[in-house]
Amino acid sequence: MRIESLDAIYAPSSPMRQLETGYSKWLDYIGMDELGARAEELQGRPFTHLPELVKVLREQQAIHGPISPVLESKLDALADGEAFTMVTGQQVGVFGGPLFAVYKLLTVLKRAKQAEIKLKKPVIPIFWMATEDHDYAEINHVFVRQPLSRQLRKEALSTVPLAGKASVGELEFDRLKIELVQMLQRLLLSEAETAYTTMLYPELIDLIQASHSFAEFFGRMMRRFVGEDFILFDPHQPAVRALGRDMFKRLITDHDRLNTALHDAFEDGMPHVELNREAAHLFYHDGTRELLTKQDGLFTTKRGHRFTEAELIRQVETYPERFSNNVVSRPLMQDFLFPTLAYIAGPGEIAYWLQLRPLFHVFDWKMPLVIARLGAVLVSANDEKKLAQEGVTLIDYLMEPLPDHAFDEEEFDQSLYAYRTLTEVIGREAGKHGHRFDAKARHVLERLADEMRVEAKRDQYRLNSRRIHLSTRLLPMDAPQERIWSMVPLMNRHGLDLFKRLYDVYEQTEVERCLVKL
Image (cartoon, rainbow, N blue to C red; front, side, top):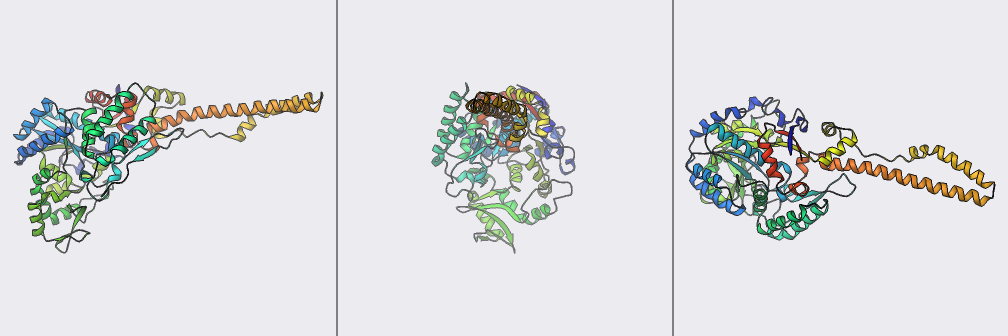
């Protein structure tokens, strides 16, 4: 495996390339060089809940699989206030979700190690699993190849009660296990069988059977196939909500200041992203997940809940498990719970994080470092061979993918002009010995022309097969590879340790936008 720089993976205007240049004026800290300043700021803030938080983290790791002894000792240091964290996060997609979820995890591992060396203090990589999110359609599917088609088929799980209304952490998982097994079978059947298939399939079946929630399945996938040196954090638990009680109250009492800050946050030059600027940035859970808004001094939901500020504070005090964060307040809760040096973000997250700095300032905090995740295109030797056969480079292909060859019947017929002339001549000569010889000669030659047409179409199919291969592997459905493919097809092709090997190579480089040659 080898890594090379590949800036062409993102357009020059992409947040992934603009973060530390064009967007720097909207950040409190720019790049890893300012880790020291961020660490100093964090050391001036109280994190009195850390011993209890570490206890929760240890209980959660027991669900997903063992962590390394080194990480155990770092948790001890965190409980004592002698460690920092780096955080990333993503929805808990089935079979690990899209590849960029893994890339986030690899990045937070790498950056945490770099921060440890720089600060000479333990730094713990945290993967914040978005179990509070309610978008079931984001997590319930994989994409599967189809024969002779550039179009991948979306394999999705059936709907479960409260899907799309309740947090995914509350959805029934066990009832979907048979569907997940069938989804896995279809996913692997769409791939060529390899030496790894017979090892990968039973391992994934075991992970499905051992899991009892989407978060647990996701976490077990990451623990098994990426490593034991990071923390998987599930915020959708009563113990976590209780630890966030004081932050929930601050979000309520400082609602007006936060909303004013968010209303004024967008500036010309920022990437456009939709943020709900009218919400209270908290969800209230009463069977379903309801967004709170403040109107005429009351906090309300669409289903008719109405609270004064004092009533809502009492609800938080008594029932903190009834509250969760939205996309705006989650980064603030993250900064409250963890001494967060940096957040590892993808392009969409970078776009909205740029608008969050004024909200951190409401609490007299600074926004943590925002660092772009690894971006990658994985290319096999077979992919490279097919690119060479097409006479294009990978960069050329990413900029302008090759369309299918169309079979032109008229052009083929024109190519047979001389052959048709010869057929006519042979027919006339044979006809001199009787009409039946004319008909027989023409029949034989026409049949030969049909066979040539079939062979020409076979040649075209072979050319298109190569182009379909490149399309589905490198730009599936004209989208970045990292947004469509899951871990499973890649491990089936290249081994169960693929992502551990990728991390070993990635860790040794300074490249963040990568061509990975497998």
